[in-house]
Image (spheres, rainbow, N blue to C red):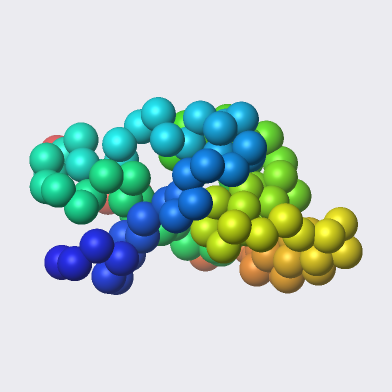
Length: 111
């Protein structure tokens, strides 16, 4: 699988930002620690956005405390953009709309 295909994405793409430094997002090598493949540095499995509002703290190291801050970090590290407060609020509202009741799951009986 090529880097960036399927469920895996490189993050951050812009490592020099203050938010990337603040939350130490470059300290862990991500998928590379498992595969030892060149190109897998800072590549992560992308989680589902379902109920993302309920899953704080955010990112692989759990250092980003709120969804609003996670949106800012994604914009800075992924697109090298600083969002306005209105943009953060709109994106956070959309992500909050992805919340819902999960279906009941029956656990298998183990021998």
